[in-house]
Length: 362
Length: 197
Image (cartoon, rainbow over the protein chains, first blue to last red):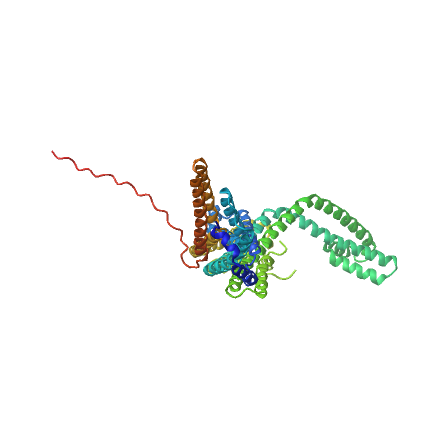
């Protein structure tokens, strides 16, 4: 006795149809959506990081904690939406993968049927029939998957566009918060560190001024050594202009002794040069003492600036990624609506690549 | 050093007057709702704090507080804006979830899960049937039973394939809601008439 399944074995016409279907399977390509799903997850991470950076800055300000909590409550829906997008893209990728493996599903089915018949000590499904079923199912699965994907993407596209627009707006809004929060943190920190920074910067500034005067002293000495009287005179004028204290003392000397003041000039200059040299050494020692505190201030300031720049950058990149993601979704839909071709495959892949590119260098 | 708007300020009173002017600009920036204006006002406050003498420390604190007010205004506006968009976002998210559910359901259909499950059940049933047949004394009767079982198993398989083709081939739109579970009916308390008399 022959089962209805085994009777198929003697129908070459059906096998011919299967072969035709296999040959035409190139018109039923199911796109690989795994990269799309991967980039959706990456987009979620990017958006989440952008929000976290802003939140971190806010927590460093003296802003009321209920405001930070209020922002978190408002943001919750965005977070939920991004999770849903990841779930959606994974479901699409799973469906596409399963559709592309229709032959395997058929193989499992024929195996199961064989196991039923073997239980009853009768032959299972003949190998050629099993293979034919596999080929047929492979084709059917691909065609149905494409149709189903098209259906799902068509229904989802308006929601995708809405989500992309809203999430991008939310990210742009956060960018402003990020900038102002960084500014508030910087201002508060600068105020807090003002005593140390003003003192340190004051030491440095005075030392720079003294070193400039000492340099003119050396240049004047060199001019005198080379008997260049005019140059030495010019350096003296420069010296008096650069050191008001010295200028005042020279004027007093001239007033006190108008005839022989020149005899007392060199000792006065030597004394002043020695004083300034000692002062410079003292200033530098004091500056070194405050150097660690000043370095810590600079490092913290750079850190705040880094938070501002990174936060802004990741928020901008994420807004771009969200828009690129919606474009990739539309490209995929367009590809499915038309007959799949290499050009469409490239367009879809390029659109997915844009989501990836948005975070390039992260 | 280039001339700044603070170059002419000398006394603490001068600095206080200047801060009053800046706070007016901060207020305008808060009212404008424009991020650029708010950032500009904050930068002005920052410059003021840097340029002011240490004698004006109390004024610096007021300036720093004003910077926080700018941030507060921005956060309040952003919370309101995001919250206003949330209902639309929620509705779109529901659609996305429905689409994901449909994709999952289609995937299951493609995997012939239902067929596989049914075949497993059929196999168990046939095994039980066979054992019964083995125990029977009459061999002809046993053979008949086996053949009946085979025929049934294959008929079931065909039905399932046909059913599956119908399920995964359907492309109806707008029917994505999950079938509602039947709510268990509450047993109504029996009304008992008070016995008269």
